[in-house]
Length: 335
Ligand SMILES: NC(=O)c1ccc[n+]([C@@H]2O[C@H](COP(=O)([O-])OP(=O)(O)OC[C@H]3O[C@@H](n4cnc5c(N)ncnc54)[C@H](O)[C@@H]3O)[C@@H](O)[C@H]2O)c1
Image (cartoon, rainbow, N blue to C red; front, side, top):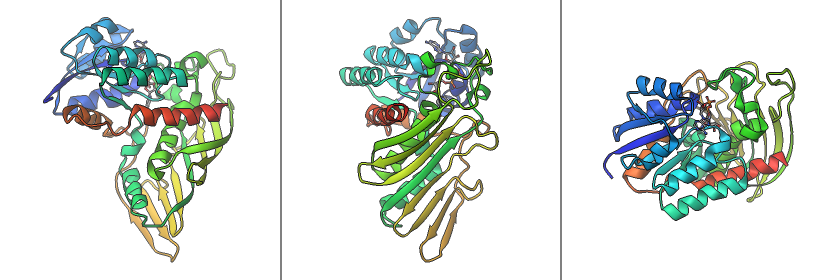
């Protein structure tokens, strides 16, 4: 395939800040077609990103000129849109978390197998420069084997990110978000740990709670806003993780990997995004690129990787199976 046209379902923040600008900048994408059940949102983005609007999701599925669809709807409809898009012969880039249950995620994977189309999931943490560099050092065993790790992802909460900037946001609703901060931020770091360590979290002990966020009625939200957990991987590594919507200061997106011959500190320092300290006292500081935050949107590389997989007919770098594996860990955390 030489060039593609794409459709986007859901025209909220992730579409405005990442999918639409990154498709627009991609040289292989000829057109972006927007759909949102709130048509004004679709119209606003079509104007901003020089695209076209359709009035129904069926019109996207049935448009033979559209090759691929980004599913940027809220969590509870991923299994509907992504499944239908695949079964209508479209490649799909689904937002995370892949679905609000394992059964729904499996439906999407089944549709991918039946259709033979590409399915990628937006676990964008893998693509950042410091994570890429850390992965390379781990693969090359520069510091020997990984023994333990700790990872964190926390910010002020989605009510200052989503298109509905209020405490009535769907992110706070059980039937729409399902997993709160665990599925919003936690799933990114679980995917990252799987990717960096070539390993899989197998055993989980966790606490989660709604410690601070209130809904539009002033009551505690129905999903967790904080998670802390201890993790054990299949290869026997031990780690800790914390995910929070109540870090009321700078975003914390940091990971530390403790190895036989030293330590890797990732995104602890905004200037030196990767710091390697060896057992014998050497310190190497890498200046790569600041990580994307809600206030600093840079190209994630995810859209380019998805388009690339379609153009060159290769397996996308984050598959449905990868996303399902991480989702299973999130379900264990919540249990
Ligand atoms: N990969 C990332 O780093 C990242 C970051 C933020 C959000 N997300 C994910 O992206 C998805 C969207 O999040 P957002 O921040 O853009 O939310 P948002 O609330 O800003 O926007 C969601 C949009 O989708 C529309 N929508 C919802 N359900 C729909 C449906 N069934 N049909 C048509 N339109 C529908 C809403 O009207 C709204 O305009 C979520 O799954 C979220 O978890 C991923």
